[in-house]
Image 1 (tube, rainbow, N blue to C red):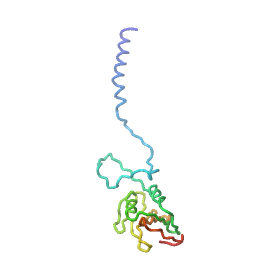
Image 2 (image 1 turned 60 degrees about the horizontal axis):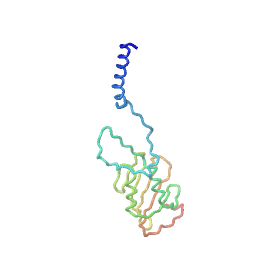
Image 3 (image 1 turned 90 degrees about the vertical axis):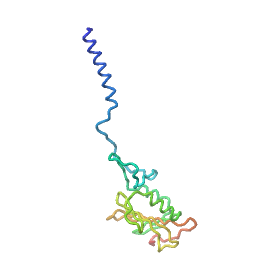
Length: 173
């Protein structure tokens, strides 16, 4: 092998060794990601909607509608019957638990009396004290999206020492 070929080969190797490491550390020009999914949110912590500690044009906040979280909250209550408009559930914990569950659902408060928020996917969640029910329990109501025929879920939060009233499935409360 001639000197010219050896120097050409060594020059190529040196150039390759200088350029190759930088190609590994440079940022990609295009970033791809899988589709956004809210599946499994019931067992994750949801960031407060009013969180302002991170402010950046590049910061993306994903707000899921809370359906999975609502199903998780509802599953901890006892089904108390229903009719063609409502599914009624009963549990204990009073105001503190009702407020905690209300606050854990994502959304923006749209009304303060009764406290109502709209979730990112269009559901209304309302926290109020029932007036026509024995014991006047606090209630969290999860309404379907507008213009749907879905029933409304209501969870009554009785004080821990209270017993749940028994209702017939057709009775609305």
